[in-house]
Image (cartoon, rainbow, N blue to C red):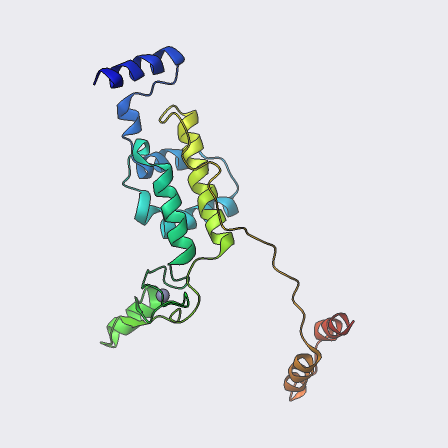
Length: 212
Ligand SMILES: [Zn+2]
């Protein structure tokens, strides 16, 4: 206790003291405030909202800002990169080759309504079964950029003294290699299209570019 009091006093003297009630604000509560005052274009807002709802909120919304630790964030990044299904975001476990075990997923949206009306099961075998586990590097980078942005804003607003999400090791997001159709594939597509349709100008251009 003496040590705690000493550190509080040192923090007050250094100007880094945070009122404990500020650090108890949850990430979900903080994000609501942040969202109200955030100035950004609609596309960026949509993207961060989607990352929040799908990936961040279910795990972190109820965490007090002061209790989000760097080791917890590291463990979460590793889970996303090595265990999660990129179709349903479930964690069915992986086999010894790193492939997702067979698992089911709950239907949502229109598919759920349709199944309910037909009295059918509302779960299906997830098409992510058997593929490599882990979310894509770009997705993880996007998710962590949003988490880190929120925590930096919380530091600036005086809720927490430091951002625990800076300079975390993330899977490297490399640009995708350019995509080309092979000649045989182009011939097949053209043949399909010519079967009743004239190939459009765009396709002829694509053919010329791709056979270059
Ligand atoms: Zn799945």
